[in-house]
Length: 480
Image (tube, rainbow, N blue to C red):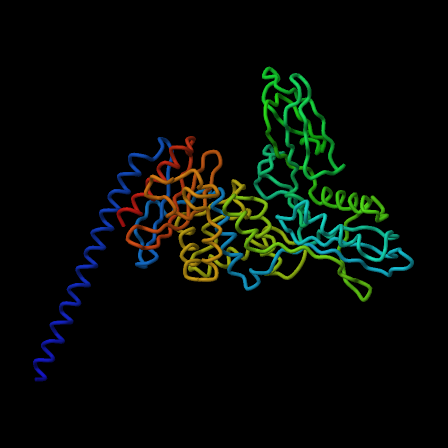
């Protein structure tokens, strides 16, 4: 009887091992087939004169799927935001909201504040016109209508550098290159909405947010094609905030332009609106670090959830949001003021080291990828994606914020409804001249989750690079 049972167990074990070996052989064969197809795809679709690095990892099976120059240093463009976001999410205080606070320091006597009012910046990149009005209203409801001291902005959270290392000076005054400050109003940009008037007459222009901090010159012409394209600029070489609108306006349209000195834009508009609400305040605001004491009272606070900042950072590839995440990370890890980009990047490098990689093998210059000094590899991006996938709290927030193929963000018009990739790819794009990258997650048709990074370099055809990236995703989705 015992011999029969042992024989049966031995047979079962043999069959199980055989099945496992067969499954392993099948996986190996599938992987080899996929690798061969991807090699062929790279050979045929890589834009002429360019190069690419690719790393693909099956998260479900726990094994690499494909590698092609995965250790090649590449400029990440906006896939740099993945390093910033994942590191920020890994910090214990990651869920803390971004805060902008108003305090007064002094005493209230007979309808007058005998002391100073402070606006303390927390580098909230989503602070908008409505949020500013909410702070102004909170102050207007206080039991005083005159300030006999001064109104200060506290921007001590960050150092005084208003641009990142390696940012291109001639990208100014584009809205995607913001002036960085812990006090930001509408991302430090002005939106100029235009609609045509009578033919030949200046177009009707409206600026948001409204403020006397800048001035608008209207040199447009309605329904007059010979006037050229509608354009808004300013004398950015001399830091002028006189906005000059020119060209033809034949229908409703809008342009967005950055404003020099975000902190001054914020404080000028804040004081101006206090005065409009009947609070007498010295228009000559200043900047000073706030130190609370026994006479200090917090009178208002505006909070923006971390997820809202992350969503805009990744889905819309917002550079300001990425820099806000990086500098707040530096603040959280050092617990001091006058944070530099390097403080946040030190935290990113610490995480890279925790993953068993050497930070000295890469070069990190900013949090958003605008800098041409950034150099990372596909294998580094995949290592961070693997780390995030293994941490439920990080993965849930990250996955929710990534663009979805054919649905939203910077992937809204890629891998659409009639393609294998529709809704299966959640990934971050990265694009500027000569660079096109895609990194994130996809789900194959066999149900496996995959982390991947594709970094095209030295390509003057972004369209061809994107077509190749999409084709790589299709192969993995359908043939894994």
